[in-house]
Structure formats: C-alpha cells, structure tokens
Image (tube, rainbow, N blue to C red):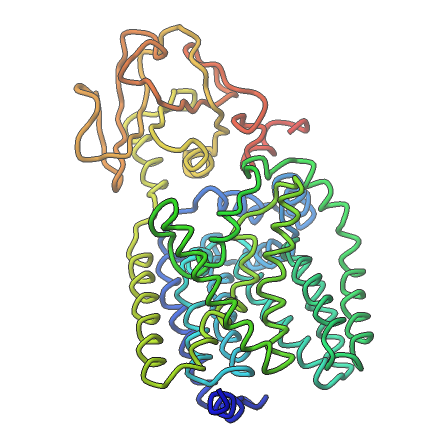
Length: 508
C-alpha cells in the first residue's frame, strides 16, 4: 500500500500541460471529428433535428426566438449560433458542423482536464472515450445543443478549478460567462451548478476563494434570469410527456450509455451498468483521496446524475440520459482513474481492452446507415403521392412524422389519422422490410434503404383491411380525406408537432 501511495504521489501531474498531453488532446479531437463528419454531411435530418431546422430557417432572430419558446424544451444559445451561421450563408444541414466542432473540442478538453489528476496516457484514454463513446458520437453531428453542453461543462470545470487554485479577475469573469452560457444551452446545467456549489462550500482547499467563486456563479445566474419566463413557458407546453415514471434501472444505466450500447436484458443489463458505476466509484475514491480537483470531478460526475434522479423520483418527469451528457467528461475520467493504481502490465492490458471495445463500438456506429427519410419522401412523390393521400406506417409514428413533413414537397403538416369507415381507393404504405412485400399486389413499389414504399389500391375501407391492421396513419389535416379523420389535439396532432405549429394558426 505504501508503494502504491508513493507511486501515485510521484505520478501526480502538475498543472502545466506537457506537449504529450497536447498531442493526445489534438489526436482525440481529430478522431471525434473524423467519425462525426461523414454523418454530418450525408445523414438526413431526423425528428428532433427537423425541429431545429424549422428554427434556423426563420427570417428574423425574433421569429427564431418565438419558435424556440413555442416548440423547444431547451434554451436559445445553440439555436442563436446556428441561426447566425445559417444567415451567413451556411446550409442548414452544414450547421451540424457546429456540433462536430464543439464535441471535438470537448473531447480535447477532457484530456486537458484529466491530465490534472492522471498520467498522460490515461488522460488520453479519457478523452478517447468522449471521442468514440456511444452517447457522445450520437449527438456529435446533430442540429442540437448536446455537444455544446459537453464542451461548456468541461470549460466550467477547468475555470472553476483555476479560480480556486489561483483567484483572479479573469477567472471570475470566465466563470460568470461560462455559467450564463451553460444555462442558456441546457437547463440541466443547473444541476452542474448545484453540484459545483456543494463542492465549493465543502472543499477545505476552496475556503479562501469560495465566496468570490460563488459571486461569479450567482452573477452568471442573474444574467440568465431574463430568460426564465421562456423556460416556464416551454415547460407548460409539456414536451416531456413521453418520459415515464421514475426508473432506478434507467438512472443506473445512464453513465454506461455515455460510452457503450446497453448489452443484454434484465439482470445482465443491470449488472453491467452497476459494475461500471462501481468502477467509477473506485476511481472517485482514489481521486478524492489525492486532490481537491479530483473531488471536483467526482462532484461534477455523480452530482448532476443524483440530483436529477431525485427530482425525477419526486414526480417531475424531465430525466433523459442525453440531458445528462454534461456528466460525461467527468465519468470518462472516473472510469479510467482506477487503472493508475494497477501494476503496469495489467494496466496496459485493461487499457488496451477498453480501447478495442470503444473503437469496435464506434466503428459499428460510424458504419450504421441512418434512416433514409429523404429517399422515402422522394419515393412517395415518385409513386404518385399527393397532399391528402393517406400514408400507412408500419414504423414508429413520431420517428417518421417530422422528417416526412420536412422532406415532402410543401412541408405539409401531418397528424395521426383515424379510419372513418369509408373507402379511399389509393393509399401509400411504408414498411421496414424491403426484401419482401407484405402485400401481394402493390401498384407501385420502391426501395429506400431497408424500407419499402408501396402504392396500393384497396377495395374495402382501410379500417377493415387485415393487411393494413396495426398501421399508423399519417394525414394532412388541412386536406380533405374521405377515409381518415385527423387527430386535432394531443401529441398525435399536427398542432402538437414542433415542425408544424407555425403553419396552423395562432392557436398552435
């Protein structure tokens, strides 16, 4: 034990950044960018991205802010940056490179942050987990704010640690601005602030600077305060309706899902997630014993997860793993910290295994094909679809509704249709299998990746057709349909859709 403690003390890094750490930071940033860029260039917009695209296409900043308030559940900073970039002439889909840049820089900053408490190789491994982690990769090329949230969480930790170590006016201004920017990026950043405040007032080495740092953070919160009415208005729109009741299993698996897919089912899945948390807890204990910065990383990793889980358990349904990506950089450090106390050969073996598994998962995700919503829409038109013609989905209603609204000509609003019992002679069907039609006699059939788009003629009301049983029906509520009646309220209505509220009158 004494030998391990001496070795840890000798390996404890200084606050100067060696060239090897800078090289590791640049390397993981390039890896993150290389993995994300092809998807940013080629993937069609999916459900949530369509909502963002509707904001970016607004003609004025005031109109964009109004749409954010009406259709989103997150603050406006990322959308403002994206809107300005689009106004400067960048295509909407290319605005995705904001997220590519933010996540790449976030991965690099994770290396810099980890270097303060770990050796350079393990700091590089922590940054690599951000570059190739499942949760981070999935949101590194989207028209969404999650990559900026990861970046700001890392910056916040670095600035707060610098302020505690050496209080300066520059650090305090940076801490204030980072606090404001974080709150203007995602409301869950508040949980990071709460966790940081707890650490600040309990950490013995922060005693001399905790008041100045607290004032900076409170000033940042005050600068955010004018936007609080927007947050309240967004919450009243109930965009969290889809989140279920409190689930301890979901909370336990959240940290694991940052880095790798969920494997297995039942007790196996729970066991894997719990084991990961246990390793992170071991790393937390070791880093907590070594330095105040180690204890800060523990607070910023576990703190927001615990606080948000408590809020969820009290009945406020806001918990979603992607909303907690701000914890990711700190869990990446905690997840590899325990390796530093192992014998060198075992450390290299386990670290190599982590790299192999992480890259294997990243390669699988990078090679996965996105759902070709754009091709589905073009195939529908090519097969003769016109506004008001029913579309049967043998897929998830919400996954397809917004993208089809975006890619179909004229951006028609779409709602769930309920069969009326009357006859429509022509319908279009989207099925998940393109290898064999479930319908024996389609008039026309096209293939869009793994999906089939078919045009059918039906001789009986669609509600009575066995072949169409189980389908969800999409219909434009602004067009007259004989065989379907559009749902006009709730999440299945066009008025509820984030992509169509502007087109259905002020009551939307």
